[in-house]
Amino acid sequence: MPQLKHIPAILNKQLRHMTKPRRQGVRIFGLGASKTGTHTLSDMFEAHVRCGHEADANRLIGHILHKAETQDAGPLHRCLQWRDRIRNLKIDSSSVNAYLIDDLLTLFPDSRFILTVRSPGVWLRSMLDHSALRDPTDAWKRFRAYRFGPRSGHPPQEAHLNEAGFYPIAAYLGYWHQSVSAALDRVSDGQLLVLRTEEIGPRAQEIAEFCGLGALPTPDRTHSYANRFRSGALDGIEDAYLIDMLETHLGPLARRVLPDWTPQADVMKLRKS
Image (cartoon, rainbow, N blue to C red; front, side, top):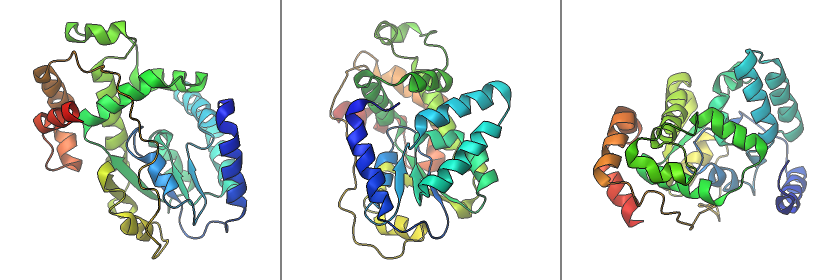
């Protein structure tokens, strides 16, 4: 269940959906990992079409975990078909979607997908800050365990992360790897648009055309859900260690989607921002 403080905003958004025409053309699914711009992708065209950000996420998570545990995709597929009929979203942007690619392609094969990607070092800091600030629902706690694995096995260099209740750095980087590689490996080039997080605003018209929305006014909001909180979780990690972790776990894949990426520049940026 959503937190009580969010219910008025959720209801208002659902009422606004009722005033918009039903979806025309292909479905659009945002696939980015948490903290890569999935919220922005949903918000920027919300004035024109039905959009959703992590709509029904708690319910979907339960079905995703059921499928992972039992190999039974039936309940998940019925849920996806039900919400497609009820919500009729044109743009469905959610970090959960990275775990639904095969299911979405099976049920809605003509869909298009948008992968938002953030430099992994800067993204890692944002994920840690977000995790320290937010108290997730029980479903999201289970999903974190599914995405990240055991909250143990920290190398000595990460002892303070262990004490603060964070997962090992390798676990977070594994999640970044999964969310990016799943989209690149399973979605055909013609159905996939890859966007750097910082390009979402400047490429708004290109995104609109990819979504089949035609020419639209420049969106009022091109950066939603910005987090100004800093946990300082990476302050105790030496640059050399962090650079090595980024290169070892993500180097080839990061350069596949961010050709000019280097772990050195990434770490320098996260220290300054």
